[in-house]
Image (cartoon, rainbow, N blue to C red; front, side):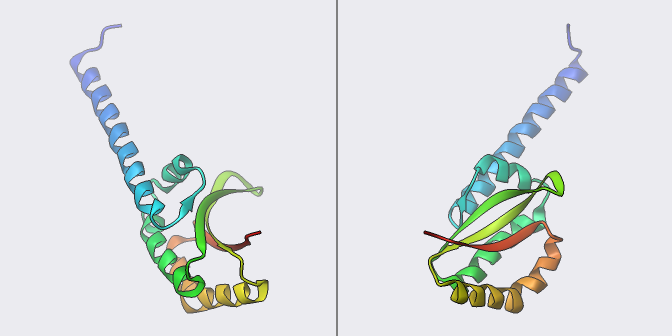
Length: 134
């Protein structure tokens, strides 16, 4: 099948756009790698496409968590919701060895002092949790 010049231009434009989007995903992932450990980088990059508010708040979330949890690792991961299959939620998970009571107090302070107000801007597209490392 021979393509006319308009079809070729459209295909080239689509290929360029796909390359640009993939490069954007990599740029976002590179920036996030400095702040978080990432589970399934490709999926997270794809998930963040078109979620500008979530992308914008991620560095702030990390800063606010560091103010409370110090150097504890924080990972980003997508979690599937059984009630909404195929619509995963992005989680920032603090990995801590702190006692549960202390971690609960710190997470409560994070929520009360910052997250509950900030989370309104991301409309449930990002959740924060604590995971107790072994």
